[in-house]
Image (cartoon, rainbow, N blue to C red):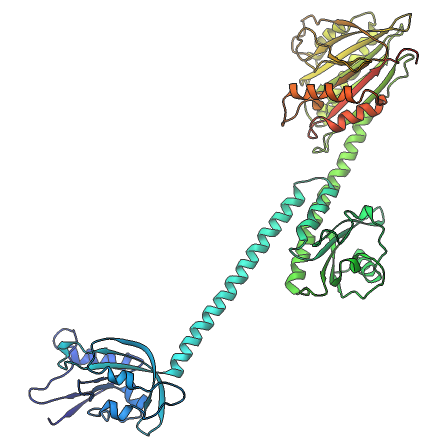
Amino acid sequence: MNPTSAQAPGLSVMREGEPPREIRLAAPAGTGDALLRSLGAAAGAGIYAVDAGGRVIAANAWAERLLGYAPGALLGLDADHVLKPRVDTDGLPESSTALEQAGGHHRVNDDRAVVVRADGTTLPVWWSAAPLPPESGYPGGTVVVLNEISERRERVEARADRYARSEVRREQVESELADTAWLSELTLAMTTTLDTEEAVWRLVRQLVPRLADTAAIDLAEKDVLRCVAWAHHLPDALPASPDEAELPDHAEHRAAIAKVLKGGTTQRFRPTASGRPDLLSLTDAGDVLVVPLRLRSTTLGALTLARTGTGTPFDEPDQELAEEVARRASLGLDNTRLHAAQAAIAETLQQALLTDLPQVPGIELAAHYRPALAAAEVGGDWYDAFPLPGGDTMLVIGDVTGHDIQAAARMSELRNMLRALAVDRPEETPGEILRRLDTAQARLTHADSATAILVRLHPGPDGSWQLSWSIAGHPPPLLLACDGGTEFLTGPHAPLLGARPTMERPTQRADLPAGSTLLLYTDGLVESRSQSIDTGMASLRQRLADHRAMPLRKLCAALARELGDTRDDITLIAARVPPPGA
């Protein structure tokens, strides 16, 4: 055979004999050569084909350039003899694997080899080989694709770099999401309580060990700086509460806090050993941040965060996160302080609306009022006690619906009206006085629902006491006997005040024995969302009997503290007859 070569841009092909034989592609008639040239030029890799004997029968310009041959010079060469090095080079395997696939029947992909260029130098390559299809006209032939290892490595490294950057970004996004979720949990913990002490303890427990090994909060209260809460990742490193410890100050720590309180920014320092059992030495602090708890122009205190000397020091993102925590904590603390101030004002106003108890010979009186913890408003609970002409004493307890100024005004109005009605006609029974209050209430502009109990205490000539009472929709009085027995003083059912202005209200009567205690109370003491009123009244009977030996004022306070719902006002008024011989 006399081989000839046909030159075309990007492709060299050798045809043999008569009629000419050529590599055929699956393409429409007349377009095979053009398509072959386009594919060879655009492949971006060296491509050559060999017949069953290993002779090169086609090569594109990329292969000729990689191997250092002039256009068409590869055609007819024995690829196994010319391109295969005789020894291993640069630790890469010889190229015999690829060349031995010539005439094979299997595809070989992404192997590594060394080929010999026209000038005798070697070239490391990545290659793949596949059998030529039967319709190519060269049964047993093979097509080989070559890439320089450097180019392949660049692509691999670029892909690895893109993957690494995407992994870093993914980790950053996950970290930011985790920080956001944690900050949301911290904010929720701070804002779901209106008690300052509870809020600061929740905060330090959230910070350890998430952000620091040690966290402490100092608050400025009336120009006095006081550590109010702390936490450490080891539970026994610090006393349970700052109130239980008298630790000496660490000079650098106090100085940093002083700068913060004077308007300074976050302070960071590495504490030196003080030789004393202060907060930083007890916690082995090696890196410390003191962050201002500041809202607008007011500095509420300072947040101290410390990591141990063997731990990872704070970095800039840590400090930014700590300052965001302090900002949110400042908002929460400001809310608790505003609520506490409003609650104090409301309680003061409420106490001003309540009555000082009179001194009644032969009987002891006591009262207690506890506002709802969740509200910073005056409420509608009231009590009253006043003497009547002739020596009798009136006790009143009532409850107007609501926790606002209107409820307080309504309460004050009813209290004053009831006292005036009772003093105006002291001979009337409690039921008759309440009926007249019904009539008067119907004329009021704001007739909110209200309940009340009116009790008359009448002293006998021998020192005994009798009582008469009338109930308007209110829980019944509770009588505690000297021996600890208890009894609710119930009677005919009667509606709320003003519900039926023309209805007669009944009056009940009973003796008040020596050593007994009469207790009037509002429904906040016995009713809550977590229990029925029957359960609450049973608990009241038991606690009253348990505490019967207490002084009357302490008894009322203990019942308010131990029973009822903190979300509602609680009011009590009690009368105690001295025991025999007292």
